[in-house]
Image (cartoon, rainbow, N blue to C red):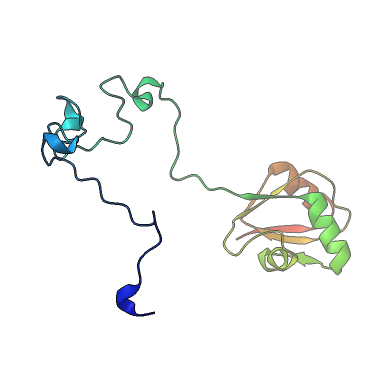
Length: 148
Protein backbone atom coordinates (compact mmCIF):
# COMPACT_ATOMS: atom_id res chain seq x y z
CA UNK A 1 0.00 0.00 0.00
CA UNK A 2 1.38 3.37 -1.06
CA UNK A 3 0.22 6.88 -0.12
CA UNK A 4 -0.69 7.57 -3.73
CA UNK A 5 -3.06 4.58 -3.81
CA UNK A 6 -5.09 5.49 -0.71
CA UNK A 7 -8.61 6.76 -1.40
CA UNK A 8 -11.30 7.93 1.07
CA UNK A 9 -14.20 5.63 1.83
CA UNK A 10 -17.09 5.80 -0.61
CA UNK A 11 -19.56 8.51 0.45
CA UNK A 12 -17.29 10.10 3.05
CA UNK A 13 -16.35 13.08 0.86
CA UNK A 14 -19.21 15.14 -0.51
CA UNK A 15 -18.94 17.89 -3.07
CA UNK A 16 -19.61 21.34 -1.63
CA UNK A 17 -22.85 22.93 -2.84
CA UNK A 18 -21.83 25.84 -5.10
CA UNK A 19 -24.45 28.56 -4.86
CA UNK A 20 -24.88 31.36 -7.40
CA UNK A 21 -22.99 29.75 -10.27
CA UNK A 22 -25.59 30.05 -13.01
CA UNK A 23 -28.94 28.45 -13.87
CA UNK A 24 -27.38 25.14 -14.89
CA UNK A 25 -26.34 24.46 -11.29
CA UNK A 26 -29.92 24.57 -10.05
CA UNK A 27 -28.78 27.02 -7.36
CA UNK A 28 -28.30 30.11 -9.55
CA UNK A 29 -30.45 33.22 -9.85
CA UNK A 30 -31.54 34.05 -6.33
CA UNK A 31 -28.94 31.67 -4.85
CA UNK A 32 -31.51 29.91 -2.60
CA UNK A 33 -32.44 33.22 -0.92
CA UNK A 34 -35.84 33.77 -2.53
CA UNK A 35 -37.09 37.08 -3.93
CA UNK A 36 -36.73 40.46 -2.21
CA UNK A 37 -36.87 41.15 1.50
CA UNK A 38 -34.15 41.67 4.09
CA UNK A 39 -33.06 38.02 4.07
CA UNK A 40 -32.22 38.17 0.38
CA UNK A 41 -29.78 41.08 0.82
CA UNK A 42 -26.12 40.87 1.72
CA UNK A 43 -25.19 41.90 5.25
CA UNK A 44 -28.54 40.76 6.68
CA UNK A 45 -28.54 40.15 10.43
CA UNK A 46 -31.55 40.00 12.76
CA UNK A 47 -31.61 42.05 15.92
CA UNK A 48 -32.07 40.08 19.14
CA UNK A 49 -35.80 39.78 19.82
CA UNK A 50 -36.80 40.94 16.33
CA UNK A 51 -40.17 39.51 15.37
CA UNK A 52 -40.47 40.58 11.74
CA UNK A 53 -41.81 44.04 12.48
CA UNK A 54 -44.39 42.81 14.98
CA UNK A 55 -44.13 44.53 18.37
CA UNK A 56 -41.49 42.45 20.22
CA UNK A 57 -42.36 40.57 23.39
CA UNK A 58 -40.07 42.67 25.59
CA UNK A 59 -41.97 45.79 24.49
CA UNK A 60 -45.46 44.24 24.76
CA UNK A 61 -45.09 43.17 28.39
CA UNK A 62 -45.84 45.74 31.11
CA UNK A 63 -42.95 47.17 33.06
CA UNK A 64 -43.25 47.58 36.81
CA UNK A 65 -41.22 47.42 39.99
CA UNK A 66 -38.12 49.06 41.31
CA UNK A 67 -34.72 47.59 42.22
CA UNK A 68 -32.97 49.59 44.92
CA UNK A 69 -29.24 49.49 44.19
CA UNK A 70 -28.42 50.52 47.77
CA UNK A 71 -30.32 47.63 49.39
CA UNK A 72 -28.32 45.62 51.91
CA UNK A 73 -29.19 41.91 51.91
CA UNK A 74 -28.73 40.59 55.46
CA UNK A 75 -28.32 36.95 56.40
CA UNK A 76 -31.05 36.34 58.99
CA UNK A 77 -30.03 34.39 62.09
CA UNK A 78 -32.58 33.59 64.78
CA UNK A 79 -32.17 33.61 68.54
CA UNK A 80 -32.77 29.85 68.58
CA UNK A 81 -29.69 29.40 66.35
CA UNK A 82 -27.61 31.54 68.72
CA UNK A 83 -28.86 29.52 71.68
CA UNK A 84 -27.94 26.16 70.13
CA UNK A 85 -24.55 27.48 68.99
CA UNK A 86 -23.76 28.85 72.45
CA UNK A 87 -24.83 25.58 74.11
CA UNK A 88 -22.94 23.35 71.67
CA UNK A 89 -19.65 25.27 71.85
CA UNK A 90 -20.06 26.69 75.38
CA UNK A 91 -19.73 30.29 74.17
CA UNK A 92 -20.43 33.51 76.09
CA UNK A 93 -19.66 35.80 73.14
CA UNK A 94 -20.94 35.20 69.62
CA UNK A 95 -19.51 37.41 66.87
CA UNK A 96 -19.13 37.24 63.12
CA UNK A 97 -16.04 34.99 63.42
CA UNK A 98 -17.94 32.39 65.47
CA UNK A 99 -20.86 32.43 63.04
CA UNK A 100 -18.43 32.06 60.11
CA UNK A 101 -16.65 29.15 61.82
CA UNK A 102 -19.99 27.44 62.51
CA UNK A 103 -20.95 27.76 58.82
CA UNK A 104 -23.89 30.14 59.30
CA UNK A 105 -22.46 32.88 57.05
CA UNK A 106 -19.95 33.31 54.26
CA UNK A 107 -16.96 35.63 54.43
CA UNK A 108 -18.46 39.05 53.70
CA UNK A 109 -22.15 38.55 54.51
CA UNK A 110 -23.82 41.10 56.81
CA UNK A 111 -25.85 39.51 59.63
CA UNK A 112 -29.15 40.49 61.21
CA UNK A 113 -30.32 38.83 64.42
CA UNK A 114 -34.06 38.08 64.50
CA UNK A 115 -36.24 37.21 67.49
CA UNK A 116 -37.51 33.73 66.53
CA UNK A 117 -36.84 31.40 69.45
CA UNK A 118 -35.58 32.31 72.90
CA UNK A 119 -32.30 32.95 74.69
CA UNK A 120 -31.93 31.51 78.19
CA UNK A 121 -28.29 32.39 78.88
CA UNK A 122 -26.39 35.68 78.94
CA UNK A 123 -24.67 36.00 75.58
CA UNK A 124 -22.72 38.95 74.18
CA UNK A 125 -23.82 39.12 70.55
CA UNK A 126 -21.97 41.00 67.82
CA UNK A 127 -23.76 41.54 64.49
CA UNK A 128 -24.45 44.12 61.80
CA UNK A 129 -28.13 44.63 62.74
CA UNK A 130 -30.72 43.49 65.29
CA UNK A 131 -34.50 43.47 65.30
CA UNK A 132 -36.00 45.35 68.25
CA UNK A 133 -37.56 42.18 69.66
CA UNK A 134 -34.25 40.31 69.43
CA UNK A 135 -32.42 43.16 71.14
CA UNK A 136 -34.94 43.15 74.00
CA UNK A 137 -34.78 39.35 74.36
CA UNK A 138 -30.97 39.29 74.52
CA UNK A 139 -30.84 42.09 77.08
CA UNK A 140 -33.66 40.51 79.12
CA UNK A 141 -31.60 37.30 79.39
CA UNK A 142 -28.66 39.31 80.77
CA UNK A 143 -26.70 39.51 77.54
CA UNK A 144 -25.44 42.45 75.54
CA UNK A 145 -25.43 43.50 71.91
CA UNK A 146 -22.82 45.24 69.80
CA UNK A 147 -23.34 46.53 66.26
CA UNK A 148 -20.37 46.03 63.97
